[in-house]
Image (tube, rainbow over all chains, first blue to last red; front, side, top):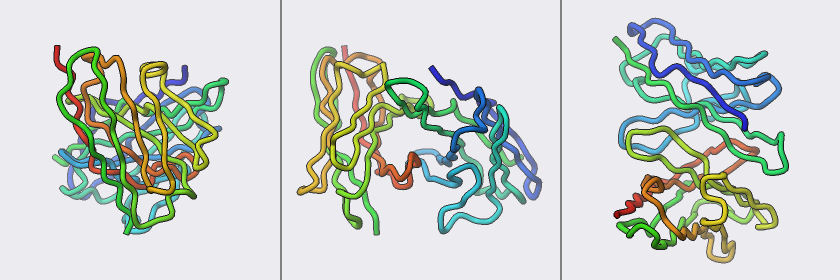
Length: 110
Length: 117
């Protein structure tokens, strides 16, 4: 089955740039979506189809995807960006397609 | 405003059953595919099931296949998850989400299912 690998945690000083990666076999051939989840809240879509932003999501959030790694980049990190971030793809490689989430990365603004 | 509201969670004994509901509003639910995603306490997100807008196509995660059944009633703007033979590891917050081209663009607030031995 298809697996997505994320680092458990990333720390960055406020105002700096955070890069959260999502590894998967030839993930560059898939559409990657990213979700932000704050404690006690439901996830929120922040980037879809590798690099598009839903309305209302700040331009500070951007994404890229190539080869075996997709990356969510958060520029000028703010304290309010502290959250868990999950990548997600749809794995259609078998007769039984499945949604797949990465294990999540906790972003801490130091 | 798009809203998804889950209900039906609660405490259930191991081996028991529970039916979750998800009420959709603010959009034409019959035009959208839907998913269920769960999150065990302190753990990450786990996708568990998908249903197409017409109910013709349904998929399940291996962890719930044969025990859970997803369904929908477009006339009632509702999504369901029938959960049977519940196990300890099914304890989680269950979210319904709107699926637009594989991205989950709106989520409910979740409903907690606790399986007790």
